Length: 544
Image 1 (cartoon, rainbow, N blue to C red):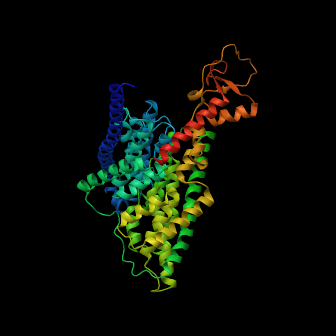
Image 2 (image 1 turned 120 degrees about the horizontal axis):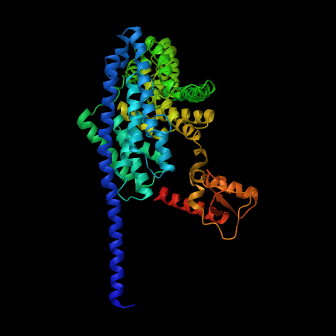
Image 3 (image 1 turned 180 degrees about the vertical axis):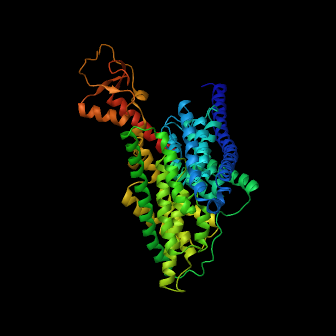
């Protein structure tokens, strides 16, 4: 080979590596941009909730329980009913103009679905419509959380900003995680938890190539939020005294209780959601009637127990401070669980993490009060167990024990509860998985046809479509009326199962709308090759 040609090839190789490094640098730059943009979006989302809450209860989101308690019974009851009417109007318009084709608000499960199915793409219009539904829902007293909608909003911002920038599918998934991490960081003032939440829940892996950009986005969002809202923990940790050796086994027992509470919440929400949908189909009334009907029931509960309204952080603060009796904590636990299940089953917007914290705080505070009466002076205060309960119930409901543990640390600024909290979260999560088999998000995805319990390799069989891997129909191979055939819209797993059952090396592929129109051909060799390639690509992405 001539010397000049060899030099040229070496120069081109080095130049290609420089451009590859620039691509990584470009991801980092966009991660920072996404972090700042998502933080401002979350701040705007919180302000929107406060505006609606001021109109509904004369108080901001943080003081909605006190504001509702000062109102008359009729006005407190009417607030979520009117909010439900507005939610129905937004859902109707969003469905008519094609913004929310599913006819519901979106949340974290949709972000996970976008990562697994659509290569990290989320519609901006869908994201804005879902944020509007959630802001009205939470501001008018619907019992749900703001963190799920915030994560969806952050991911929407990320998807919009990187849409036309030529990023690969892998990079877009990483940037989607950046938006989610920034939203968690901005919502909780918890940068470390934001990173781990994106890795644990959204991306499902801890690859080094995505850790850096996600950390950069989370830190950027924290800086922006602290500039505008200050650097304060969400809750002031109570004085709980010295932790004795008996507190850790007691925390383990509390983990069992919180596992039962989390399982009861998940199962009641699932069954009520299915029951409400079946009732709407049976009696043939529009699903758009569900928000005001649900609002009427939530309003009735909240008129007597205003602590169930909204996100519920004011009630958590009082539970940490020991302002509720054991009886009232037990009643509030039941009422909050009921109100949240009704809210989520009646098409209101909102997440489940804040309700999980509230349920855990009520459970822990009641448990701590009982323990203190049984063993006076021998254990930590009820506030200690309330903090443990927050992490145990929240982590079990989300199926995210690692990031939930850190969220509780960063929300309270209290790291003295480390061992007891980790024990309780672990036991609660294991118990919930044993009783329910899946987290709230995995249940939502299973209702859409995606079973994540089979792991990432099983997800590939569900998300790769026949149309993506089929080839041209071989010449001279007509399709007889009774011949076996594959459908282009079916998954690769369905196609492989049909090929095996029919004992065929390949089958023609037909259009899903016209069963006689052949659009391609899929062989078993081609299907397995596509599956193997997808597994290799996924393995590389998850471990580099």
